[in-house]
Image (cartoon, rainbow, N blue to C red):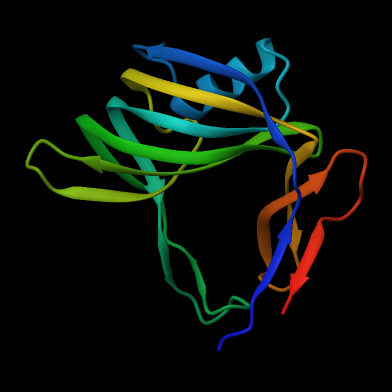
Length: 168
């Protein structure tokens, strides 16, 4: 049996925001602005799909210089129109600013499927339907993790400094 390790926090869902991002809005900037105007600090993205004018993303590739032996490639840009099949992620905070960690799948005009880690400012929508759920009693943070050598998801109970630990 493999070792099981996790950092976690327990809370509940609060407000739910359903929205359609309209033409020209960047996907991640739009999500973060919806959170800002609705006074949501941390959220999960329950549903997200639509179409893009273009899409910019990265994905994992081997990298001998990294702690784990992997890293992100250079930005990949697919020109549209692009069908945005599905996306999911978490809206986090880092140094007092929003930082959304989002992955998705797209389809180009030839039916080729691509996907990865979407980059802020690189995914202007044609239209996107989405549903966000606020988290209560949990803060979603992005912060540097020494074990991986990268910024990672760090869920912490409200007013706590570190997440719960599972090490079994």
